[in-house]
Amino acid sequence: MYKEHNSLFSEIKQVARYLWKRGWAEKNAGNFSVRLSAKAVASKEQIYPLEQEFSALANQIFLISIKGSRMRNMAKNPKRNTLFIQIGPKGQNFQVIHRNKHAQQAEPTSELSAHLTIHNMLVNSASTARVVMHTHVTELIALTHIPQFCNETALNNLLWSMHPETVMFVPGGVGFVPFELPGSAAIAELTTQKLANHQIAIWEKHGAFSVASSLQDCFDTLDILAKSAKIYFMLRNSLENEDPPGLTSEQLERLRNIVF
Image 1 (tube, rainbow, N blue to C red):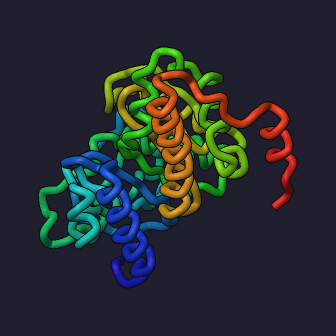
Image 2 (cartoon, rainbow, N blue to C red; image 1 turned 120 degrees about the vertical axis):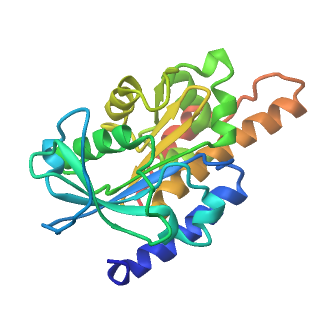
């Protein structure tokens, strides 16, 4: 299956390198999944039950990062750090259908439940997004350590006001998810609810999820938001911890009316 997805693996190398160099992927932080197709593929691998039924994902094939993988290693050899999995015909189980010879004992990311819950919603809503990416965006995590920004409205108003690109390219803002244990059903459901209406869901004091049609697009949206957060902290330092005024309501409205 590798040859038919060479361009995807090239993209994975590039984006994994970005994540690592930005400091958003310490140790084994970060994971991603790409929905590829729905076709029957024979496999002798073990079938694993899923905690819930994902009927919209029946027979869907995914390329997904493996549990414990490092983005610095992903950037060098993505084939060793990913698996091809297929969801069962009723959406109740999954099976590895192809793996690298160096990943014989590998399992999908520990955030598999969140990924599948999000993909199930994306398919049901006829979204063009086929990629789900989770990473630890330092600047966005830092913002959610400030109580006043643990509020979706306040968080979005800040991010939009710091840089024109943010309101232009992330006009729908971000969804905010209060702290929950990673890997839990609760955080998967809350994240999915937010991603039904946003490209990005920010986990309080943890990281962010991004959905898009490509890994590059997932990264780009996070990159724009991170710059807004970085500008905020730079200004706070120069203003002796006073909040910067940012773009005015009138300026934001003019930016929203730009037609691309």
